[in-house]
Length: 458
Image (cartoon, rainbow, N blue to C red; front, side, top):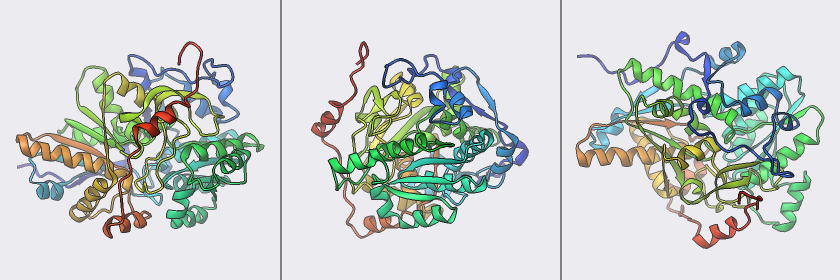
């Protein structure tokens, strides 16, 4: 009998040498970004003041199916990639399910997450262009940590605007970002015009990713030799993260497996888009038809309760408009929301695929997420990030359905990272003080009422 490995690593030679651009196989492309002043489609050149030129090109490229990964980035990847594909034998046994559960573990670097896959690419292109500094935002802190690592590698000064409530909940994220020479600011702050305006309107605001994006963009466009980079949502980020799915598919082929169900947590879409990319390609081209499930927090439910509409990507309304599932750029999740995935909108690529019926979406309450996280940790010995645990929750639910039906389905989910910087959230769950907060229809309608009015569109 063939021995089934608990974990499978590709060799360095088997690692992808190209990223996969999912847009090249989409039957209908996402709607273009719009200039907020003219409501006309944004050109690549209009993005140059905000993004590195090569990243702006990747953002707008809808036709190149495979894009070469620069050799220098490949060499950096080899420090922590390929990441393992792991069979969750103990979790399967604990659930008593006939399902086979695999997970792609992305936590094997200091950021504790998949975010470094895009961070190093964006820092590389900034250095190549001769830029002298970068700015960004971060919510839970994984992206800020990853970008600090990447910028330190290239000796690029970095300013990170971190959502205030996360900044206060996760002090050790601040310490590690500073270890890699990053400068971190709690957002909204009094260091930018946007931040001061937000604080004047609501001095006690706990912040949002939209607020932090506004501050980071303002800092970038008013600083010589500086550009803004983003860790999720954008087309370029999903492109870089496709290495997750490409590795996963190759590893499963080596095991003679193919997933019936692919599950990823969903905030802005970076991990989900990266994990599902080659499997969605199969679905779009008719080679296979896996179920693809996005899992989001019930406290920030952009796919399951949002509007498919043009909206600003930031609270200060200075960024281009993107058509996506959104809760409104002014939406701020409850301060007791500890599970990450706080962004008000979803990647335009994923929004379009969801809108066209190629994937499903579910939302889950955070207490149920942490129930799944602790069960997983006990069975598989990895303390998962709260974000990742949304995918774990859905994977467990699907495995239990298999137990009821007797179907031996193959489930693949993304374990985006570790939860070692999230101990306040775990403590809150374990001591019984964690609560679930779900926005009311009235609250969401108020946010929808502030969506931009675009002549001839909405």
